[in-house]
Structures are given as C-alpha cells and as structure tokens.
Length: 166
Image 1 (tube, rainbow, N blue to C red):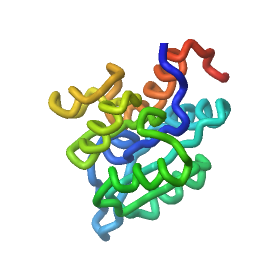
Image 2: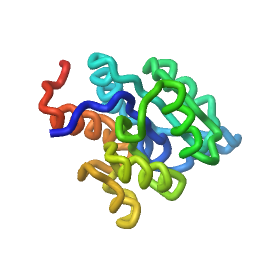
Image 3: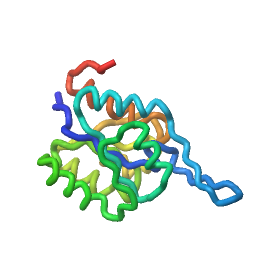
C-alpha cells in the first residue's frame, strides 16, 4: 500500500488533451479538455493534496482552465521540467518520493525517471509510446484527453487504501 502523495504534478498536452494542435483559419489555437479530469482535481483538493501543472506550452487556454479548476501551481513555457520539479520540492519541503507525476512524452521523461527512481508515483497515458509508458508505476487504461488525469488520481487514492472523497 502506498501513501498519498503530498502534491500531484501533471503535464497538459497529451494528458489533459489528446495532444493534437488545432487551429482555425484565423490562426486561433484550440484545445479539447475532458471535463472528467476536473473530478481528479476535486478529489485531490478534498484530500488536501495540491495540484500543479508544468507544461512546455504557454497559452491563455491553459491559464483559463487552471483558474477555473483552481489549480494550485501553474508553470507554462517550461523547457526543463525537472528543474521546476526540484524548485517545487524546495519551496514545499517535499521530496521526489512524495510526488505523483503524470506525463506523456519526451519532455516529461526526465521527471518520470527521477520521480520513479526516488519511489514516487508516476503515470503515463496509454496513448504514449511504449518507451515512455515503461516509466509509469501505475498502469493506466485511458488515453490522453480521455480522462486519464482523473484515472491517475483515483488509482492513487485507491492504492493508498483510501475512499474516493465523493
């Protein structure tokens, strides 16, 4: 049985979205979010676990979604996610072993490796490559953009022998 993490960190593109980049004829960018992921944030907050987003993109869309869901920490335009994770650890006085991280691609790989090596919890959507999935400590069934963040949070809670805070 695992303990609950002290913070849950997540990528956006390929986790909360299907990873596609959508543009209209005027150049506006669109992202499709699955609303069931908001329950993952709600469950985390009900258990007093903060949620942080670390993404390589820097968009108003992600800012608005984060504000709507009351995401605790938002880091956009990040090229070195592991550096940001270490900064979060220092600021919150947590170790990598006390983190849960979900990501889907090469930009997440160093964080996935570090958190897994430290004994933290890692998750990777089923839509990611087999190589990236090999760094997941929880076997997730859902694909990016299909509610995989919620599945990750639920599996963490159940794995800690806790009830879902409905």
